Length: 390
Image (cartoon, rainbow, N blue to C red; front, side, top):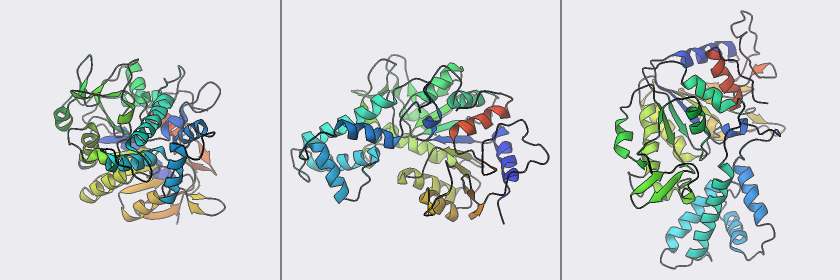
């Protein structure tokens, strides 16, 4: 028996059209890939692209250089050297032990500090770009956010460091709150984040892994204006950062994800996320266990299995969804809904319910795993007809 895609698209449309229920979005690394530059390439590199940039920069280094030695150590420790976030966690773990001048696995504290700064600066430099002037997925998403008055605010969670969502919301005059207050150097205010009593027409934006415009100052973490350098080391908080203080933005914003999912009948749509972050995974699953009225719908890019070896594209997502009935995973070919993994039935819109929608199809099944396609679906819910990303 297959999952009926027409029925589930109908339910999806209904969920997105409600203005009284809590609606949230988790936008991860795959979302900026939907935005193209004039030459057709993605505006921002993904994690593998960032890794290639820094690897290329060290291609001619001798084997004894700190970076080449680091890559060797990562291999010995069975760490994923293609994921700069995991690399950062490994560096920071060693750095914590080396504090005071100690040597850890052959690395001095100064070498580890330099490696950390270089990787963070590489990430910050390469994701500090503006949205193109023409229409794109982020602008369509922003128009949908501001389309109706809401009794519950839209809450946007993102693991991305870039400022694309901020730019899109600002260009469309959509007020939002990101946890910072002030004018010259807006400071992080944990009390207002916890109270969260702003008007519901203000969207909420929570940056779970930090941002290129966060800066460490004597008064704490501040948000700086365009043209002022942030503190690159604040991007991607390793597990060490979570333990330092509840006043740090990272933990407070992670708490917001938990609090959102504990709201009655909350729905979180996950886009561009491969379920590779155990901290976020545990946050989602633990909240879904407590609040069984909440639902998470993960819109995954590509097919559920890789051909020809039939390995799962995102095994952690499928594993978690099979264990939790209120976590759904939608791929192009299959879906896990209600803890049941089945193929999608072919898309046959005999009643023309979706005749006015621009639906991307793969093997005659609707695909929403590309954030550009999902943003088009959102914009067409409100009668907007933008050009789709190419």
